[in-house]
Image (tube, rainbow, N blue to C red; front, side, top):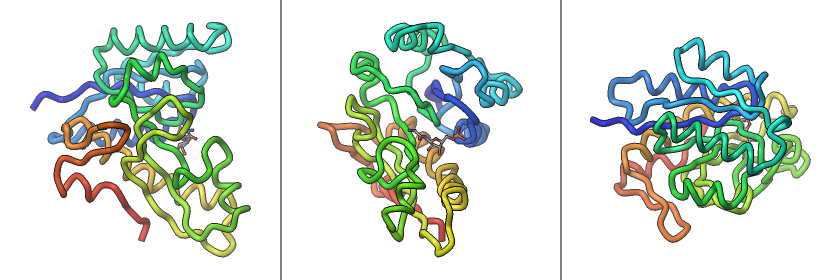
Length: 215
Ligand code: GAR
């Protein structure tokens, strides 16, 4: 099996990145990590990647100056590492339509809410404030509109009495770590694709990935 090469974009801690790296160690995984790129040179995830021998590219959006300059450096690093797919894993910069178009149908993101609810930041605080009884995460194709691309899979957790943003975030994160590698593996194995702005699953087995729950 030829594994698809994946570039991972991060901005910080990199726990989702680590879960993608862990899954790539399995013999039957359909992808391998081509590189990890951060827009913040101090992102902890860069060190984790380096320790595993993965090409880690530190960019600095502040010194690069513009969104276009950051994206052209990212694109160059992705091409240099022969990435075929891109997985955003806690990447916190808004991307231009031009960059997104280059990776149309080949770039996915994980977002910590059940989209289309709570796009943007502070999702756990806002979920608690809204009083929703279920919350979770969504994996979606990246499209020009922020957090609005075709949803591939969602991980669902109950909101418990007494939850605060930290306890809720921790339960959502545990589900993120399960769902993201599973989706990336299916995408790399050509079992999921983007067609006319919707997610298409090639078989019933792939479709079973689309919802997971934490109990
Ligand atoms: C994760 O919860 C991810 O879903 C979220 O940032 C966190 C990154 O944690 N992503 C976004 O908010 C994207 N808009 P990690 O660095 O430990 O993976």
